[in-house]
Length: 520
Ligand code: NAD
Image: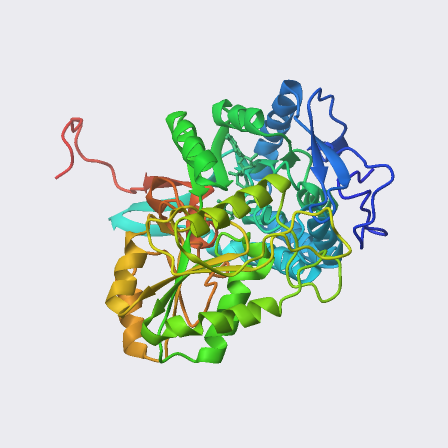
């Protein structure tokens, strides 16, 4: 049975409203291409963030279930590795077609469990789908190198899969981030164990169902659930060769160090504080719309949300106009037509965000637009924080030093582009940044001098498409950003190189004496 979490989602029927679910279905594990009910004794309740109605219970998968997932992946690996690249590619083409076919259903699961609007949830799916589409070109991406290094002697390099690999995912992109791993990890021949976020695993369960339908053999994609104990299992299980993690610094720094200490490859994308520098010569209307959209879209719960404005010179007087645009955004249940932003993920997140707004007030900043206490009439019980703008922020304030991860824009004022660059570079995060200007020379200077991994020039959220790589830096990645997600580095992460040097000499060596020295 396709017992995914999202209120009995099936291809024929899936939720399209925030109505209470009369009989919530427990989330299952996905092992050996089957949805397997968990024997868990501990369960994590999952609530619709717009209503706080129960949607499902997510198991803390038992030790036996965690082990069974790795057994399954380990057993599937040799045959999957030996399956031709063209056959794996053909499955990926089917997978892409199925994700497109089930796009609305995947988006509905995201809206129900994560809270984002239907339109934004569709974007979440699309960005992951594009990684799968790019993986369909694997036959030209996997080619190795060959060189005749001496007469009759050549060296060839191959890319080989690692074996069993694992992915640990955050709550904010329930489809996109599992799809940063599933296509690339599997198309190159690895088998995969995924732990989706315990707060919204529904989309990942549908992706597993579609993987089975596309023709992935049993064991190539497995899903286990839970919180820290599941993560610790992944970190310590010797058969898991590599870990892909996306999430907070708290969890990610721990996962990177313990996973690396256990000899695994780890790629880890962490938190952010993304700044935009706004210059007086920019296209003002474009910049203000872009900033309001990128600060408050997805209720600010994107790692590339534009959460911090650096207003240069006279642009500080534009902040009230951003507030006007923010007020025009409709906060509502994600399924409601016309909703621009939904709730935040949990009552705890709401409380934390409200606490950071209060701290800014206490530290002397100006709350220009206050989203605290706002709620849509129809959904009084959700986790609501309306768009909030905090002006006159200083770098020592808590609202600046901490990642807020909510619909809150903090604004600082400087006089010059040099001051803006200095301020942004002094921040310990380095995920993304943007500049709004009409001057190519100023943009060029910013691009060169700025210490952030992803730079937008008049583009508020410069997330690279999958032919490039997600290139955060500083504290926004663990391990100095050596192992970035998707693109060429993603392919490298999920493969190891083998070089073969061969000698095919037709004539006899001529001498009976063995040579013991390094050839010179
Ligand atoms: P999170 O770190 O709380 O959770 C991520 C995963 O880690 C989950 O699967 C969770 O079960 C697990 N986890 C949480 N705490 C743990 C612990 N103490 N020990 C072991 N495992 C633990 O992150 P989240 O709240 O789900 O996601 C939001 C965060 O993710 C934000 O900081 C955001 O910036 C970041 N993020 C970064 C990127 C990026 O590419 N840089 C993308 C998306 C989200």
